[in-house]
Length: 199
Image (tube, rainbow, N blue to C red; front, side, top):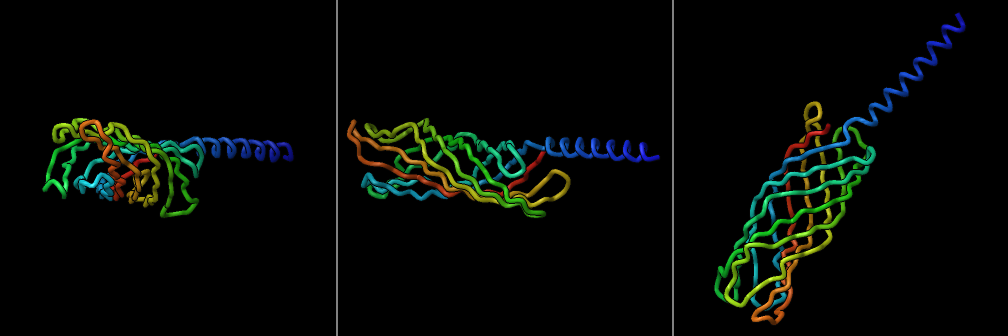
């Protein structure tokens, strides 16, 4: 009888350890789809009073959890077209497209129910299809930091509602006839709402 009790205890311990290991190994991935509002700061150092329009855009984010609290998130969207305006030159002066993939390192707070997180990372923005007055051009690449805070609200199963805000530093040098006019800072705040799926 004593041997049977010991055997059951050992078996229970092994099964319990296997279950914990399996649980820890489950669900490292999360995919979110968000609708995001881009609100540009539009800080212009060229003297032309440059600005780009605010807009709604789609966003897809892929996260990988290194452990239960720390995750990497890749933020993706499709190229976004913006209207460029100048208060000095009298309104719309052209258009451009930008695509701003961002890589974040996140910390997810160990809470039951609502799951808040904060993140920090780096943004790379590529400008393309630049259509500005003759002789005016911008630098095509921008590197800058990015900050993030958000919360995942469980809905059902692995599905959650996501609320997210990011501050991304995007800027480009503006030139005319080869002469540098100064730096135009878009530096948007992005407010997002969407759904997440953990698997």
